[in-house]
Figure 1 (cartoon, helix red, strand yellow):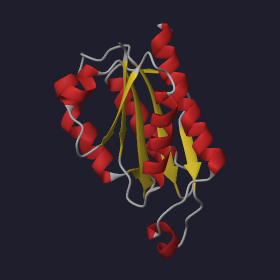
Figure 2: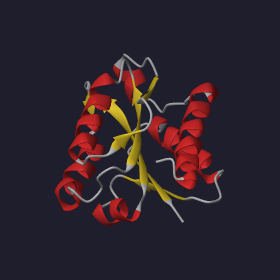
Figure 3: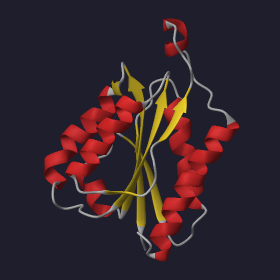
Length: 163
């Protein structure tokens, strides 16, 4: 049975909601086993055991959030040249544009020779003040629907052997 791994980090809850929605969407495909892991708990063995991936992270200071970067740092060399061609998608929860974090994940995925099967899904919270940035986030139903759809699409593609 194909397996989809969703790895996420969240500080204020926004990315956690996005990852959970993607996981719920993936669970709608009974022929695929999906796993949702926090970046601090995920490692090389988890990557090796999966057939496809969704990486979800907040953007901090126009860059990938620290614990998600730590996940990539810990896993990069142990799985290098061992994931070639596997499909992935990225999700970013950002206060403004999210492009910096999306670019960083794409560069790492390129190094792993993963295959992007969707454009990065960026949810912009418009949090711009210190208070808004640090406040717990609530992701809109429309944005969560997009996250669910992404999870379902990846799972369906794995189930059908499209990826």
